[in-house]
Structure formats: C-alpha cells, structure tokens
Length: 294
Ligand code: GRG
Image (cartoon, rainbow, N blue to C red):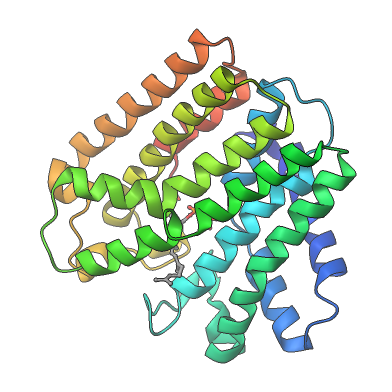
C-alpha cells in the first residue's frame, strides 16, 4: 500500500484496538481474545480505506474512522469462518496461524458469529458519534447487513462452494465474485457516500467504481493464488487449483486476467472522473488493486 495511506491505516488500527478494548469485555475471555486476534491480525484494511476515501470524495469532513471499521469486522469474521476445517481448512492467514488453530474451532465459530452483531454495534455508535441523521444511519446499517447476507457474501460463498470441481462460465464466476467479495467492497464505498450525505447520482457513480474495483481485486486474488507464494500472501497459495475452481487465470490465462482487471479499473476511474469524484486516493487504491503482490 503506498506510504501516503499510512496515517489513515494507523487511525484504523487505533480504532480496531478501541473496538477490542470496549466491546469485547462481556464475552468469555477466550472468545474475546479470538475476536481480537482475528480483527487485529495484519490485513491490508482495503474496505475501511475505501469507505474513508469515498466519504471524503463525496465531501465528508468528519471523522469516519470508527464507521470504516464496521465492514472490516464483517470481513474479519468471514475469514475466521472461511478458514475453518469444515470450510477451506486453512492453517495460515495474514501470515499467522488461523484463529481456529490458536483457539480451537468452537471458539472460532462463536467468535465469528459474535462479530456480526459487533459490526452492527460499531455502525450504531459511529453514526451516533458522527451525529448522522437517523435515516442515513439506518441506510448505512442496511447496506452493511445486505452485503453480508444471502444476496451478498453468504450467497456468493454458497455458490462458490457449489461450483467447486465444476467448470463454470466466466459470467457465472463473475456473479460469484461480485456477491462473495464485491458486495462488501461496494457496501464499504456506499456507506462512506451515505455518511457524507452524497446525492443519488454521486452514490451510484461511487458504487460503479466499487463494483469495478471489487471485481478487479478478486481477479488479482485469483492471479496471485497462481503467481505468488504462501509466504508473500500470508495464506496458502495454490488453493484454487487444489479445489479445482474455475478461476480467471484458468479461464483467461494470467495475462488475460490482468488485462481484464486493468480495464475494470480504467472504467471505474472514468466513471468517477465524469462525476467529478476522482480523488488521488481513490485512484491510488484502485491502481493498488492491480499492482498488489499480497
Ligand atoms: C454460511 C456458506 C457460509 C459461509 C460463511 C466464510 C463466509 C461466510 C464467507 C466467505 C467469504 C470470503 C472469505 C471472502 C473473502 C475473499 C477474499 C478476497 C479475502 C481476502 O481479502 P483481503 O485481500 O484480505 O482484503 P486481508 O487479509 O488483506 O484483509
């Protein structure tokens, strides 16, 4: 991630520490510790950054860092559950042993489930702290819950699991990605736009950028699974081939997949430019999607 995001990333890390310190005290210690371990493990924080950058591009001038952590809480729970033995059965995530490897599967399942209401509490308190109108706060919460639900991440995961070992068309693969990974990325951006009080046309343009960036991100995830190493990725490389998934590199070749990601980014940035929403940080984070190495 370029150096200029460091200040925002530090603010996000501080807010994540604050969440661990304030919201987890009622839980049994092991579950609270497991959540803290999953949440504070070193991720790229792409979703919080996108929320913050969309907020600012749409004219927001308050402190949206706590709100920005809400999609990260949902994302972190999905990783905890995705790594479980009954799901992808992975030992490493973000360069560290997975949550169930450290705390056991029962605690990882409970901790993951507890992170869903935790994310809603974070939205509630962030909206209060930012003094957002009730309608905006409700729409922000709906956006997050929809993205994490059956029409978003869960639906995408179910279709992804059903597609293992089958040869899927590119369009079907895209539908899976846009639900499984894209929905939460688009939701992060929409949450930022709603918090800033953006109009419908601006929100739609930011969402279009989000769909492009989200798909490009997932295409590069497929590419890195083939071209990178487990050490660089902090998780097991080569999982897609092992699970016989129809990935972008399998369908288009590595170069074809990279080009598809780049043309999506170009489209997303054009859309923002047409609506006078193209900021340097939204441009940089989009370009990071196609140049990232982990
Ligand atoms: C009920 C079937 C069912 C599932 C439960 C496990 C789950 C919910 C959903 C899985 C969705 C999932 C794990 C999507 C993540 C895909 C992805 C690209 C992860 C990597 O994101 P990065 O690169 O990771 O942003 P970091 O570590 O940087 O945060």
